[in-house]
Image 1 (cartoon, rainbow over the protein chains, first blue to last red):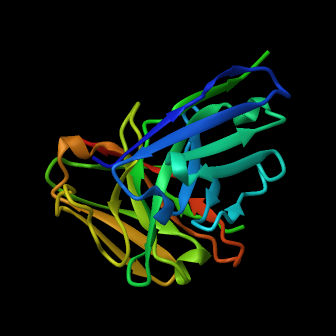
Image 2 (spheres, chains in turn cyan, red; image 1 turned 90 degrees about the vertical axis):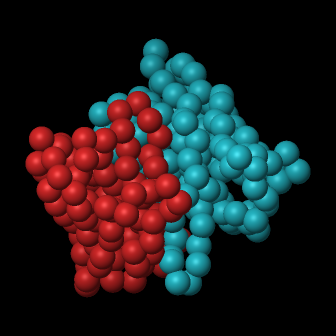
Length: 121
Length: 109
């Protein structure tokens, strides 16, 4: 069964750090680009970061310089290192697998259930 | 970066048809993908590419696109289709970024 399981969420003070993990199973993890997507309570989905199969990384301006996405293919794992956390980073964080083809474009076909990050003093 | 705009909410009578739209410049260059999200659950992919459904998604869900607008249509809406729906695409800035739409709450009456 293709599966993604996030972990590492919790309560952290403003300015603090947290590292999220996403364990992949049921597919060849190293062959896929991967993403982190977050959702604050009552709000929409927000793309947070992506990493390619070659380790190339991408971020929106809202987290660039504070968050670092990485992967460890030998462990079928995706990570998100979050530093200088703010109250606005409070959200459920999902990892997602990307599929791409020239005919069908880009899409995220497998999602984890998410892990909750709360930034508060 | 690009933005994708959706109507905040739409309602549809049980068994009728509803169309959800997503507008943005990036849609002139990239296909939209569509995600259904029910309360307390992770998003689920329902439409990708020109008009493709993942295995297990009912054929009452369909997609289309024209210019800067992508649409998701539910033909014969069921009670279980009540959910939030989000579009997503690559950003057209060339910076390998991604963007989600603002989301549409679909209520089945």
